[in-house]
Length: 622
Image 1 (spheres, rainbow, N blue to C red):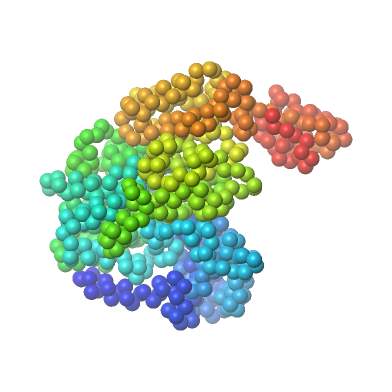
Image 2 (cartoon, rainbow, N blue to C red):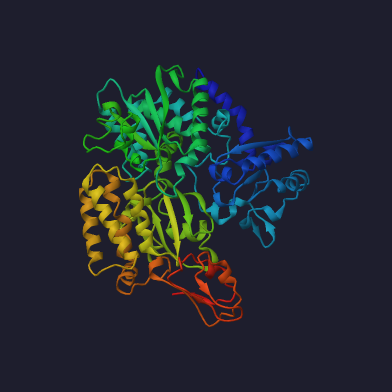
């Protein structure tokens, strides 16, 4: 790639192809595209078998040249995979199995009659098909970081270019100075999407101001929070956006080398990123003398072994250097002394993915979205007790209610919303009373949680908040690097108290001890992970104190989750059908046919099988 004109020519040549996937029937000219989600979730549910069957069926009908199949990144509705979208008519299919393919091909792709039984259920209204874009899951979203995921083939650089890919880099190198870039990023108001939300432009400015013979750009794709998969999905669905952004960042701070640190548990993301790197080098978009401007930049991949602490920036840098991943005191910050002792900027995947559109559309475009101090959009991995489990991107300031009730589809099985946990082990739990809170960096911190990388776990009325707090703290205790005493010892002491409470051995004063320990750990731990580790406990004590008190004072778990605090009891409705007795794995149920049965509590392991199997509501959980 010698100049911007060559890039523009590829974009214009390929643009029609992409327009078909935005519902442009004129661009299609009779051609049809079938997009198959190739994200990790759909891979695990069998998308490869669906793809193979689709290609076989199209070939059998002589349609392989007329109907184009494309494997894309995540479509968003991860729990409904394998997913298929047809274009230009924009029909969204869910839970597709190989046995469904022949019917979809013959009835829909040939006959023009969508197979309604497999269409995304929210796109059927009054027995009529509507565009999936008009469903609540999609219409409340605004995609910037995820703009290309589910639309382009992530292994085809030309398709990324067709979506204005690498135009931001070209304009940067040809028309802008490094200081211009930093001013644009600053003016956009973008804050880091990986944790505390530090200003991205400020970070870049600090590194740019440092005098050094060598500087680095690092992308944090470690993503260790339970239930989080935002960064993974971007790398799987749009890897070139990260490459382009890192090159722009390198130009802004005068760096010629970058590293992407990604956990080895993301094989699809790693493979697609490696393909993207190779393509970018072949097109002259990485390497030496990019666009003939004399700017040199290249990127390397480093695989992490899954240590949660390596999500902390200084620990991550140590790991790249080949050392044990442990945080170090700051200052100096990485912008001053980072990778190999040189000035380094470190941002996460989602932050980098926002940079190219900011450069192309201008900082005002980004700054006009969101709230006063939290600009743009945020990607969330929505999980837990929610109907629409998946990946969503919403403007900052969107209320929790909109995410849960509209985009998420509400709580299944008629249950009520109890709380949402944001920020992973570093975040807190937001109670139902605060469901109208606008989601942004400052509001979440104010109510005792944090944005974090973007995991959002929804919980219903059957959730024990004491057990949730214990779960997150147990994770932190397992993952602590052990370098500083407050985190290594303090979190262990807190976990011991929580174990005692959930096992029915809680004592008056335990909550005060948890509060005191939590505040000490927050104020004295070495890194941000230790400093935020008490958040799940402190927030649940604040908003769900009555549950803790019931565990301690009444030896009662209202949600029936903590096994030491409940029993299964057979009531007077028992007719002696023996189903529960035959299902019990420990022979803890005694009784004769057609006579009331009895559970021997000393043998009962509280597995709940009898409770689930009983057809007569004859077993209570007390």
